[in-house]
Each structure stands twice: as C-alpha cells, then as structure tokens.
Length: 134
View 1 (tube, rainbow, N blue to C red):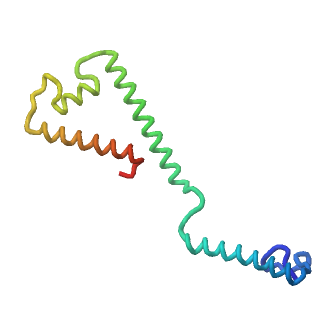
View 2 (cartoon, rainbow, N blue to C red; view 1 turned 180 degrees about the vertical axis):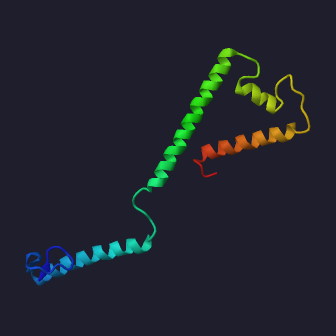
View 3 (cartoon, rainbow, N blue to C red; view 1 turned 90 degrees about the horizontal axis):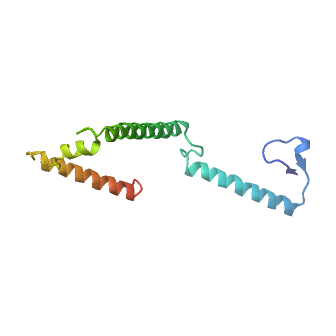
C-alpha cells in the first residue's frame, strides 16, 4: 500500500496499491525530499526566508530622511545662491571653517580642521567606491 499524499493520513481515499519497484522508488524520492528539508532547517535554524518587516520600515525611514535632507539642502542653498548675500552659501561657510578663504587667518586649529576634512573625504570616497565594505 502506498500513501497518495505523503504523511500519516491512513484513510482509504489516500491509499493505493503499487508494485514493489514503484513503491520503493516513490518512497525513496519522498524520503530524500524530507531529509533535504530537514537538513535545511537544521543548517539554518535562525535564517528567515521572508524579509523582516521592521528592517524594511527602517530602510524606508532612512531613505525618507535622506530625501528630506537633500530637499532641504537644495532649497536653503538655492535661496542663498539666488540672494547672493556674503556668507550664506555652504561653500563660503566651509571655506571659513577650514580657513581657505582669502579673508580668514589660519589659527592653531587650522591644520587639525583640514586633516579632519581630508580624512573624512578619504573615508567617504573609500566607502562609496567599495560599496560600503569600508
């Protein structure tokens, strides 16, 4: 006797007769599938096959935050460039912070500020070029 649908359903509707050769072949195939499924569960007991909904929401939150920051930057910088007031644009402030504009005098923190800027830009470049592995 062979179970049409594998498992413990022993009702007459789920049973049929097969010759010995076909029964062994079918049972062997079903056993191999069950063993493979069991090994997958044992090898990856904590691996989820579906995407974690919390992670998907966090990615969406970070994407929205970056989009909001970019939009705000474009508006603020656009207004500053349009009005052309001294010291309004980001570039002018960066020049002032790192003492690269003509009207600023370097002080004892200038080298440290410039080193921090160069180190950050080097890290950011490596981060982008390596796909976030660095």
